[in-house]
Each structure stands twice: as structure tokens, then as C-alpha cells.
Length: 186
Image (tube, rainbow, N blue to C red; front, side, top):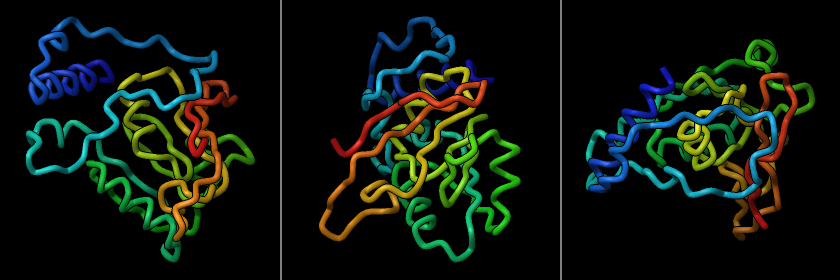
């Protein structure tokens, strides 16, 4: 299924951008137990719901299911961030997040205030949409991404003065260990 997703995404992107090179056969990424360099690699990071973009590009992103507390304002702000960057979001309001985290394999002490499911991956915390898009594009053999706590300046945790505390999004390996995936606020 992940190969079909990558092929569909790559074809839509090629059509939208007119890139002949994207018509080359797709390759998959073998997966990642070693650390991925902690940088913001420009993959498909800036897809937004832009009326000028072809619908195929906008619809290439899978739906995200976000589990959050009904009273959490920063979770709602993160959902708005996802929608603004092109994701369709379904919200499950619940105060019972711990069983969901356990089922999805979020490592102990790496939790945040909301948990999401997208494309077969878990996304825990205020992870930027660009990192989620990179994860979906690369398709590593991993459980997903985690951003422990609630770092100031992360999506949904913006400060009025625009400050961003340094934070690291981590990749959750299939064995439950985490490695740096992307650095922000440097």
C-alpha cells in the first residue's frame, strides 16, 4: 500500500510541477533503525490547500485521525496547522489517550497532549506537518514520529513574540527506540 501511495503522490507531484524526472520508476526506502540526519530535508513539505494547486496534489495526502482531549486548546491549534498545510483531519475527542498511545507503540515518557494516526504511522505531539509529509514521502520502516512535551514555538504552541525553543522530532523505530529525525528552532 505504501508503494501505491508513493507512486500516486509522485505522479501527482510530477503532473503539478511538470517534472519529467518524477516519471522514473519509484524506489522505496529501506527502513531506518540507524538515525536519520536531524535536519529539515525539503521533501514534499510545502503542499498547502491552495486553489491554484491541482486537486490531485491536494488529495494525495492521507487523512489524519487525531485523538485529543475535548478541552485542549493547543491540540485544536495543531489540528488547524495540519488543515492549513493540506491534510484532511478527523478528530476523536477523548480523555482516554493512554490506551491509544500504548496500542500504537508510543514509547514510555515520550507522550504529549495528543496522538495521531496517519498512513500507518503514529504521530505523537506537536510535530510540524512538514516532518509528517517527509515521513510519508520517505516511508521508513518505523512506528512513527514523536515530539515529547509541548515545546514553545512548535505548531500549536506558538508564542506571541514568535520565539521558538530548540526541539527535536524523533523517529520511533520498530523496536521502540527513538532517534533524531528533525531539528527545529536552531
